[in-house]
Image (tube, rainbow, N blue to C red; front, top):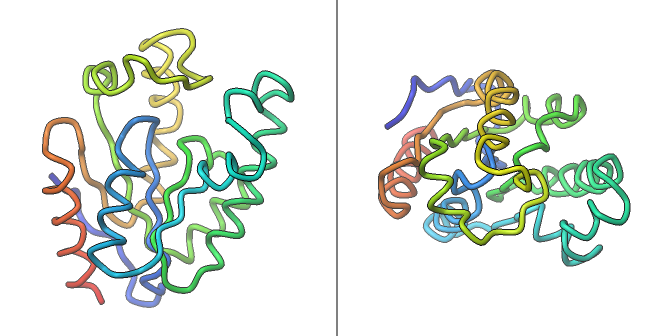
Length: 177
């Protein structure tokens, strides 16, 4: 369920930031946690799409570096919120400035398995999954050390219901408030 908590009492509790691989449940769980805590929910991928169009089109027209620049700006803006739950795209943690920013937040890392991802993303249009499920595993394996290093706490989302995971996170947050 959860790994050992590494939340430092000197770090402000908010923003609560969800990180993890594609299709780990960051948006779904983050939205439920925000609702339960009665704070705003910010999904940086949704913000990017609202301002610049679908992420698949950004990748196709301008490439990944352009998308990453847009993502960095969206993340920096979202992390300025004093009391919010923020969901980051899976690759947002690759940016060194984002890594530095996350050291001043409570970071909740979500993980899942390739099998669970296959079930969740059957018809999803995700640019970095175009090569299939093996590509997901390779990306996750490359990013996993970053997710683990940045996390205040970890939750596996492979098999448990989203509502149960969200409830556990809310319980953890209230305990550390």
